[in-house]
Each structure stands twice: as structure tokens, then as C-alpha cells.
Length: 207
Image (tube, rainbow, N blue to C red; front, side, top):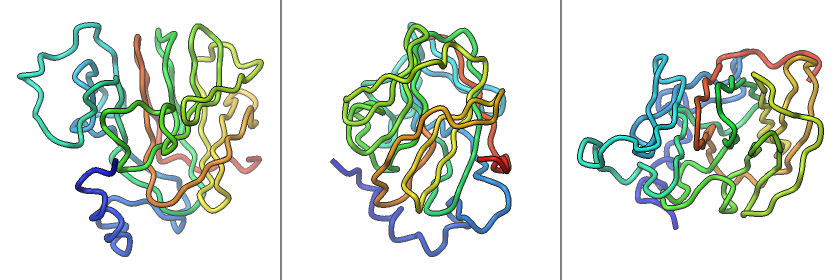
């Protein structure tokens, strides 16, 4: 179900730069921070809102500002900048996490859902060193990834592709075919440890 603010996101595509949208015009890829108002109460942001850590208990619901953009059921947080075109690359450092998901999602995905569960998010999931692609709660295994300290994500909006990148070899490990219909944002979910995002990076020439 679309959230009330979905229509305003789409109507404002013409003012992409002013409203926090990333286009393909810049030489560098998307630059973003994590948006606290979307973060589930079990998550805490750090390092200037570029990192997220999981807390078993989390923040008391009474201390978390109520708004329709916050995830209510799952430990998910979205980035603050949406993508409507172009090729973009960012990296994620994994710290002490054995279970997490990284990818992109529609800006108006249901806040009662989790990324990878519905059909409006496209993610790579890691659980106990085993990687899978996830879409609409359907999983497909990815071989040979293990537990790297850092991974990359390459989004090609017009080509409708999201790729997992081996940063040590600067090579694509797996590509997920997408179905973008509007603005999407980097998305993160985790159930232990920490994730730290690195954005504003140029797309490597060999990708």
C-alpha cells in the first residue's frame, strides 16, 4: 500500500536536485545519508548518519518521533536521497554483522514490510555467511562471497539492474534484474552488528 507522501515524491521529479533526487548528470554517483525518520526503533544511526547499528532492545517507542515514514515491524532504514536515472555506485562496510540485507527500495514501500519481502525492493541478503538475492520473499543463492569486510553496489537505473560488487577485485559478483517504476533509495536492514555506507563515489571504470 502506498504511503500518503508517495504522490508528492513522484510529482516533484522535475525538481530532483532541490528535493534530494540524484540524476545521472553528475560525474559522481549518489551521495546520501541514512534518514533517521525512517529507521526502526531498534536501529541507531552514527558517523554522521552514514552508519547504522542494531540494538537488541532498541530505543523506547515513546522516545522515537512518530511519523508515517518510520518502519514499524522490521529493522529497516532508508537513505535520504532517491534515484531516478543514471548509474550509481556505493559501498558498505560490514562490522560484526552475521545477518543483514542491502539494496534499494521504492521510496513509498510499506513501512509494515521488510526489504526483500515485497516486490518493490531489490536486495542482497547475507545470513551466516550465505548470500542470496531477494525479491518478493523469493531467494536465489549467490556463491563464493563469504563474509567480506566491504561490498559494493552498482545501480543502473535505465538498464533496470542492481549488482553486487566484489570491491577487492572490482568485479560484479551477481546482478539482479529490477522493475523500477519510480524513484528508489538505498535500503538497509540488519539484525546484529553495524553497517557503514560510503557514497559519493565514482563508478569504477571497469564496471
